Image 1 (tube, rainbow, N blue to C red):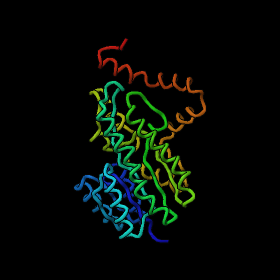
Image 2: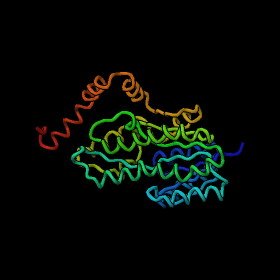
Image 3: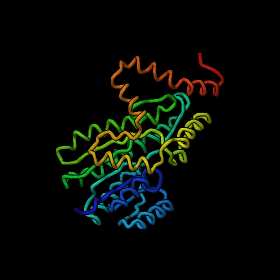
Image 4: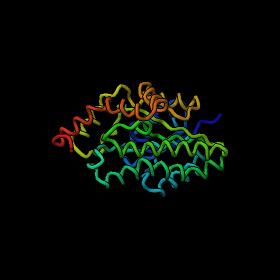
Length: 278
């Protein structure tokens, strides 16, 4: 069997790079797309040092033409693609009345529409091949929704919905779909994150920097999930149990549990804003 051909958006750092290196160690051909050329060059060198045929493409997921160009490059030079990983993403935090609309538009354009553009650009190739695997990186925030993260939650929930739709829509063409929903893990996500206030930013940084798992550990869990043929790939057992509770319990009960579990987040936000609103 020939080496799988993999394309990863946001592949120059964080989980994208960890996935690229994990595939490279398994002998895959790996093409990474990213906006950061210096990181792209560094990651490309690391992939080639692992013995992988590798390539870097400058790719902005906000530009449909960039994704179409990536699909064309893979078709021309590698004869197609076996695994498409829509990984590029950003984070934003803040209460609904605090996060500006410009930040909403920014995160929707990258986290949701970036995934849509990737799926749209590669679908014709995958249909023609009658094979391939689309892997969309969402988040546990797409399944369970903590407060003060409405923009992030909404985009990741939309990626889950998109993935569920495509899982049914593309199955007759021999195309598999998976959606990855990790909880917090150590990565560089906060570098470009936007926060409506200093407290929201501090909480996000703490949750990521003190997380139990590294990006490499999450990548290994993702590949195991893909090998099993999982649709939902849930990398954190505790958060997966919370999601199952949400599915099983009446929502009013689950909402009470969530309010209790996240009371500290709301109290810190209210204190930062000068007390509770009437």
